[in-house]
Length: 390
Image 1: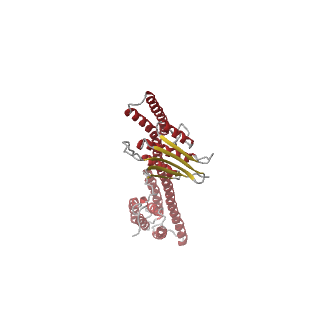
Image 2: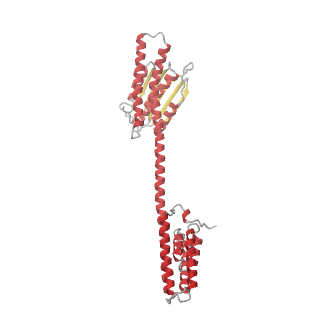
Image 3: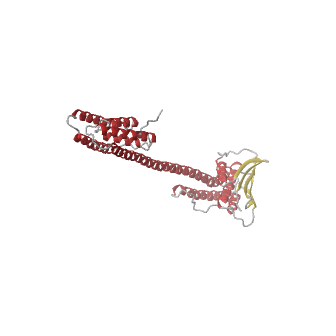
């Protein structure tokens, strides 16, 4: 079934305002009054009945033209046919034809154009004030006028669609931008959550371990109690400092991680191991790296976080175990980081949600590497392979 959808139903057709309706009706009234006035002035005596019918059809046309957007083809064809017998309907007929042309469908444009020329020719030949101009001159004039109206309608429709497409692109761009901003915020929140987990989990695990020792060990000497208390104090202060650093990200305007301290490097792994050793853990560091080799900052940061999370897990789940931290690799071959510790012979009350491993997996994948955690030969092994370009 042919689509007779009105231009108003198309997304690029704007809804007319009160002023839009007003100036259109004023223009139609001016055109109809001019055409009807010429007809009256040239009509012979005794044409009053014909002129009355002409005026009545004109009034009806002003009412019918209000439906041009709902039934564009029917209204345009009907008013064009009415124009054969009514000069007063010229204004509504022209508006209906122009409105139909805004749809820019060639079959409709050509059809209504031919019908309009024929209607104008018949009106010129049968009206009460018909002149004596040659038919070809009248035909040429009508073709030019109808073509001008159709081109105006097609231009108006094309311009409306162009403006609509530009507005639609802007709205979609703003919507997509808002979506990208929301995704970026979600990603940043996840990154900050991982950062807080990595930073605070390490420090709090040390505090928890030494606080637990002070609670259950009643045979400790005063010097040992003082050392444990000092470790708790130092790590609590470091945890607060690092927490302020991470929370500064939430208050910042840039949306990027910009902690007060420089990002960790592989050299800081030795400090991390030394802190764990000083805190009572038994950690052995094995390095097999080329002398003077430089690891990219992003890779070094991920390696540091792997060791940090691994040692945190050791303190949580196997506090008495001897852990081994291994760093190996070479430029072009990749960087391998592993943390291994024997499984405890008895259960441990501290359990985790597994978010640390999930966060490390995401970090490794974002860096282009892989993470593996498994139980091998009675040991829990956390191993990460990271790209190390030449």
